[in-house]
Amino acid sequence: MSSASIKKIIPCKKKQLIEMVLDIEKYPEFVPWCLDGKIHDKKESEDLIQFKGDLKVGKKFLNETYTSLVTYHKQIDKIIVTNIGEPLKFLENEWEFKEINHSTQLNFNINFELKNNILNAIMKRSFKMGLNKIADAFEKRALEIYKK
Image 1 (cartoon, rainbow, N blue to C red):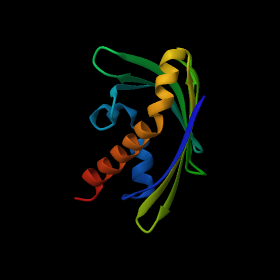
Image 2: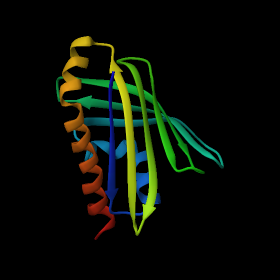
Image 3: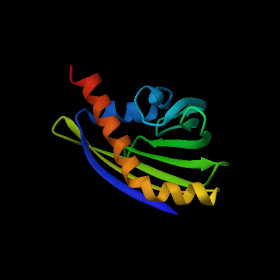
Image 4: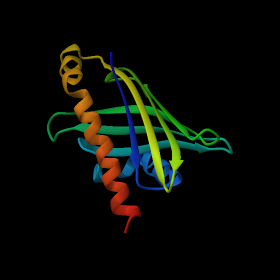
C-alpha cells in the first residue's frame, strides 16, 4: 500500500479552499493528470455534504476512471474520500483545513493500493513527487482565483 501526507499553507480562506476541493468537476482545469471529473448523487444536510465522484486520471490513451464516496464533515472541516470499486483495491484520503491569517493550512493524508500490481509498483516510486505536484496545483489555482 502507498501512503503519504502533505502539510501546506494555501493562500486563500478556509471556506474557499474547501469549495475548491469539493468541486471535482473543475479538476481537469488545473489538477495534473486529471482528464475528467463528475459528481453524482449529491446530498446535503446541516452537518454533511456527500456525493459520489468519478475522476478520470492518466494521459490521453492510458487512463482510468475511478469512483469514490466524498464526505465533507462541516463541523470539523474534514473531507474523507473512500473508493467504490475498480480500479483501486483501496483508497482513503483525508483533507483537513485550518485557517491561519487569511490563509489555510491544508493537511492531506492518503493511503491507496491499485488492483494491478505492476501499476501499483510504478506508482509507489513516483507517488510522493506526484502528490507534491497536485498540492502545488491547488496552491497555484488559489492564487489565480482568490489573489487578484
